[in-house]
Amino acid sequence: MKLTKEIFEQLNIVAQCKKYNISLWQCPQFLFLIMGIVIIVSALNAYLFGNHYIQDPLVVSFITLILTAVLFSVAVIVTRSFERLSEANKMKSEFITIATHQLRSPLSNLSWSVELLLSGKLGTIEKKQLEYFGILKENINRMQESVSDLLTVSRIEAAKIPVKEKVFSLKKLTEDLILEYQPFARASNVEIVLNAEKNLSKICTDPLKLELVVDNLLENAIRYIKDKGRVEINLSEKGKNIYFSIKDNGVGIPIEEHKYVFQKFFRSKKITKHQTHGSGLGLYISKATLKRIKGKIGFKSKEGQGSTFWFTLPIKL
Image (tube, rainbow, N blue to C red):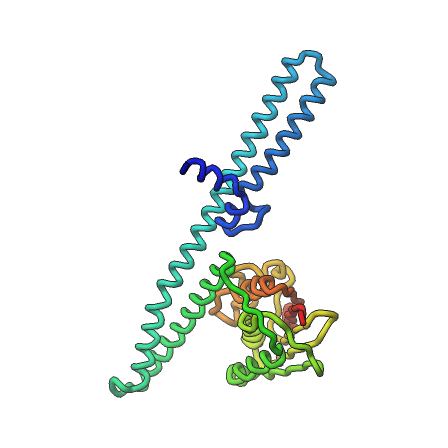
């Protein structure tokens, strides 16, 4: 009974794909099925071709068997390789999830301890000590951001992020985030301008997911402006979609690096000269999140002249 169940599970291709959290065309079992069909078709063609040109049926059968054996061996090797890669990818994702969960608690405790020390409730803090506590707090915040990004990536890859649809205003969401980023923008000598069409339609999607995307794009736009700068956000309707674009006059991205922009852990060499910290996960998360809520994202950028990132979302009203 147990053996029958295991065989049935192996034959259930959809279940195997879900096990590895990969698409059908990347699934080892599905690829093996496709290659099996190719082998059968190739063997039949070889047999028919052999019968037409070779008179001895034993020779035809022998050639067909050899060809089938070779193709089957190749199929097994390729499938096993894909299976090992899928297993390794699954283990990597599980490790990241466990590691990030384990790191969150000690980082939170450390953050609370620093906050308590900075409050002065445990005694007077000297100026020099205050400076070092400030550095410690800043680095804890960076670690928490990195852990949060890694956990988000792990959930995205495992397709474990639920989408909770709600009707809301993208303009209001953007205005709230601009207000939140104003102190950072002023400190960076950056002006933020919002241009939105009148009577802009509301959208129906997950506001928390979209907030994460806009937050990433806005933070990047401000962070990668060297001196005095300007960030311009435009909201409009294009057909049945809402169009969001954010333009900055920052350092820009070299054209040879454009193809890597939405990859995990990518940080432009031009950017790392100005900003030493950052996980390189923000744009990857933004693209994966938009894909999850049926949106599209793109950009144009020129080194030394800034970047414009945009995304579209169906209004769905």
